Length: 311
Image 1: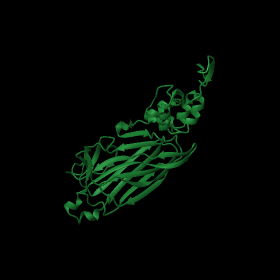
Image 2: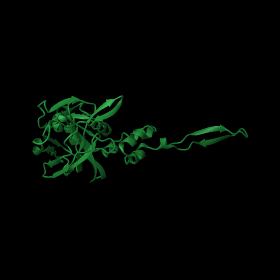
Image 3: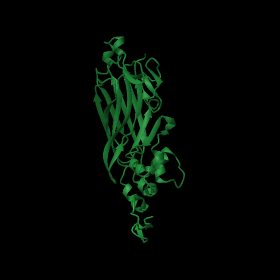
């Protein structure tokens, strides 16, 4: 690789021959020169360039290229997510496996890396949450849906004391994280192949703000509140931020969403008590200053709970 080649061509003006040397191309670059360059690209761009020629493909398998894309505590993540992996596994293969949706805790949690940034994402199903009244079928049901990565959600018919609590403990990489609840008022369905959202029975969520809170094991606390008054679409409600300093130790996070109005219970009719809400929490992305420069870090994608009025 890196050498040219010669060819002899007949001179049309005579019988003599001319020696012509081919011009070098990108395929002639040594892999050791290509690898440090593509290490500055994001993972998806590296995979695209790997299809260009043999030199770029070989360089795309270099361990140091992919180690820079992995979280700083990727070995701790491997132990947490997989337990044990095969020995001599390349960093590219480790990155690919961590980017899959990997189940935890009996399938109630799933964790993966964002393919573009390498940030950690974590999701908890509604069955992994502590929901007040979840075992009482007058108030809640678990229903199947294709809008959840867990294939089912918790469905609320009516309730006065709305309280959802969750807890997660995970070795997050060092950085600053933001946590969001992603909420939708109304029940979604498909009609003639199009997604529609029924908001006819949405009541009560605009009377009093919902309270969002989070606590971390090292004493951090954040809270926010918001009136839920936008129907039919997903809205991201910011709970708060937290900082992880020690990537080799697990961070425990407790979080909650509540809306409790005991006074209104004595004044409203049965029709006004019935309400619809769809609740999904997901990650927010922030930029954190890390040892390798500016890096995208993700908060845990906490929960998916669907609440709505019984049809």
